[in-house]
Length: 443
Ligand code: SF4
Image (tube, rainbow, N blue to C red; front, side, top):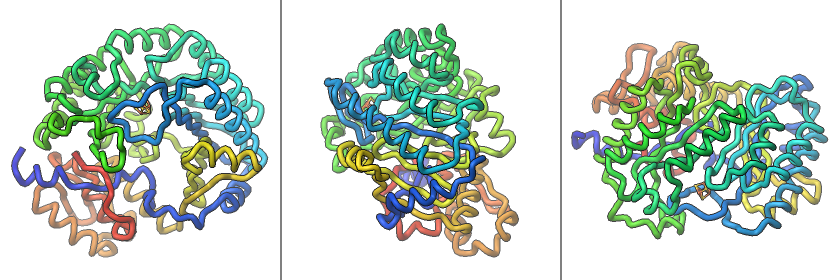
């Protein structure tokens, strides 16, 4: 990696899973605003539902999520009961019923027992119309998967499962406090497939302690052996001042920037050789997967799950910390389970922040989607290059570094610049200065 590129690789930029980005969310968007937004949705609006489960059996040292460890069943059961009340509250507040997709994330959704998962699923079915659902996805910890889960998933119509694999080398797994041997992941994948749940997603992480370039490539090859339909590859973000649990990670064992870059390129080469299509800057998919098809049709989008081919009219997030994306804007639930539950039990939406999106914001979001999904955007679709003079003068510096290209109205990343595309995108963000600089490294 040359020195110029090494410097650029340590720069930070938003991931643009929303626009405006989360630092622009304000407390002026509250439960009342959200209730009004839900009430304005058309009867025919298609919905995507997201359910957040914030609990895990134990906490992995690298984890940047807002999660809570518990070995008790009571808090999880109470949480599930409140989630059912939230489903009823949402259904009471909107005429929209048609669900296109459901996703469960966390934390660890399979901290819920199969029986509890089935109870929540019944509440969803009692309140919404799932007759045309296209996707029902659950994030799974293979260390906790049991037959009760499988039975409940099949009954609920789950058709996609995501595994946080991260790395498949024993010494790296020990260093990050998450030991789950390949055989354990393979066994869980086989159980799901035998139950008819075919679509498997795998998440990998590079930049982990004691992880060499060969380790990262080995994890990619082993993961491909499991034949997942999608993989997501993230760079480890070491922020011990923000996530105390990361203080237990040996900083001296973290790979330097040049190694991180080689890991990223090594994983990309390994997965492409295994037949995967590269999607945006951090996803891979089988050619027949909907993400690959959306890439060809240039209809991919950014969402809280990274890249998505989905196009529901509204995403409603339930559970603490979850974020809803409605045509009117974004709204986030209270991240603390206790405060979230108190709100729901009082019959109120526990929204703590959000942002209304203007028509101009929506156009910018669309522009950013094209750049981050297709690696180039045609500015003639957005009023022409002359409308973006300040953005282009910043991007010109990246052109000089060999990262970006400007050809008339077409602005994008060069081949070498693709992993750095977020650095180009940020110059189209009208709130970049206001939103502050705490973003993740591009590599
Ligand atoms: S990585 Fe997953 S299982 Fe581990 S603490 Fe974070 S959310 Fe829980």
